[in-house]
Length: 163
Image (cartoon, rainbow, N blue to C red; front, side, top):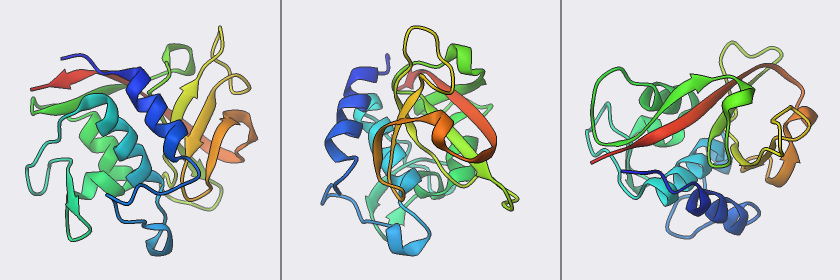
């Protein structure tokens, strides 16, 4: 099954500065960035993985997978080394990203990655200046990646969606 990158990006633009009432806003509980990233990913994938601990799903604030809202869990789900339903990705370089892919940032003083924006544009040749992102927590849309004071950056290229 193919990943609808345009649907993911449209969702990001629609909700970058607002909150979709179908989802809880985690801004006061550590941040809403990965929840927003998951919503964008779901808009493009159209299918969740309902497995309790290892899946990626959201039914309510109290019935969701860790991968739906947790930065590291999201990364592990996307790059899992076993076949299960839902979207999957590979770690890649900035040269390989496309709109609808994801980036994670680790800031100085953080032991782990702590922010998950969605890529909404890459320009002709992706660079930190031409890769533009949308995100929650630090609500933004069309923000150049180069404006984040990140100590470390990793990129996830969505390869497809398994049924």
